Length: 199
Image 1 (cartoon, one colour):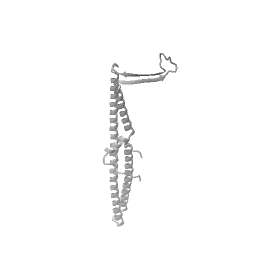
Image 2 (tube, helix red, strand yellow):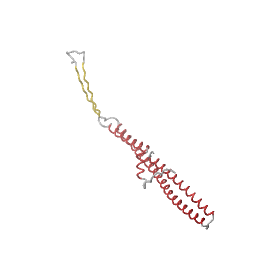
Image 3 (cartoon, one colour):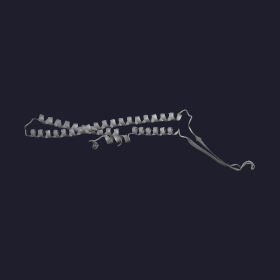
Image 4 (tube, helix red, strand yellow):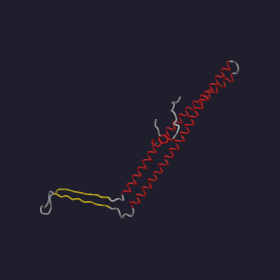
């Protein structure tokens, strides 16, 4: 017999959240969105002025005492204000923002696909679980019918044909029950795969 896969959650919503947190394609899409947003912010920061400083100190072993000192130091500050660049930085920022929007749409599309896949897998697993309950009821009925047929046969009230048919129905119900167990285990494995859970 296959191992019992455990109870199926009553609602697929937490499974969808788990899948969005575990599936590699969702994690990749989230990372792409974060990278695109960070790049858009960096492109926007290019329009701000930049300040750079440079300093130097040193000593001159060969120097002329009358004109130069043996030690020297210098410093400089450069301020770069991007005013006349043909709106290059604004265009680059707009392009980066649009690429970030595309990445966000791709993430939403990926999340919708994941939600669909998990929802379908959950419905299939729930259907298999209900079939498992139904086949258990059918097996109980077949066992009861076999007991009745056996009693009727032992009392001489029915023929061997009726007993054989009851035995066949019980065997068919056992086969259906075993098939339902394997099908439920398979559907639960598919659901675990869609969630991204690893065993």
